[in-house]
Image 1 (cartoon, rainbow, N blue to C red):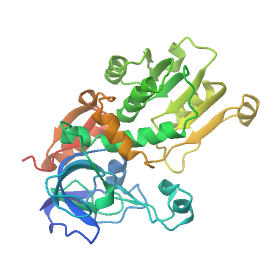
Image 2 (image 1 turned 180 degrees about the vertical axis):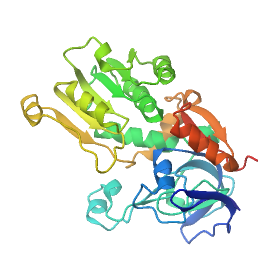
Image 3 (image 1 turned 180 degrees about the horizontal axis):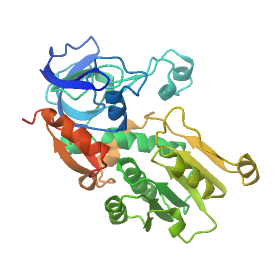
Image 4 (image 1 turned 135 degrees about the vertical axis):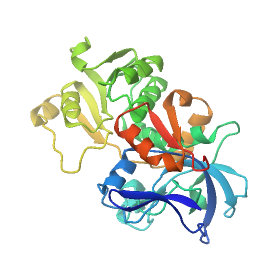
Length: 330
């Protein structure tokens, strides 16, 4: 089969590799669509420490089972949770598998879906609703991360939300906030095209800077979806007394942000993180199938495997929104 192989950081190519052979509890999936995200870009550059090389990346995907098992049959259409938890460490034992001491993921630590076929645990497969396209199915993984983020939030009906970033994750979070009973959703981004999409998807206020909003009392919920230190520091200053700041975007591992400990104490501000997927994938499938997310607005570009350099460049330049690969496309 053909697959995108990252041989070493910065060096990749599309190559002929052996077809995957499923293990006793695995199935083989013909990949229909696979998304590109920031983790993939970090893997290309050698900036994601858990990744071994060579590796086939790709963890946001959907496809059709061709070799069944574990209750699945050939022809079943599935989205796949990429999470690989050990099930034996302290964190797995207390139900916090996303913090697993031996954490792994399809496409991050073992070969993934930027290929024609991929072997995956049968237990990680989730049936796609009838009528849901492969492209929309590949959006389930990022949506499941957003669903987990909302699991971490102490939600109150009628809260005002401020989100930094109108990329894929920011737009998913904005749509979930509206569904979760937000009184208003305000979005900050320097990309005017993305802001226009945020407004179309229901954000009441959009701006290149939170300074442009007239809300001196602050917001009950502030979420960073960028990982940019300047945005994080600004967001921390916008949390209303008694409110919550969530770090959802991925910042560089060595980065630091300034915060006022006195304000955290005096204003009783909660600061929480959210990492990856935890018990949220099946619910994300259902939400996608129910049309809670405007998937058509999210996906803007589809490339073939051989076009990966162009797809990666478009991703790095912030072109469009979700960029996907179709491995079967010539």
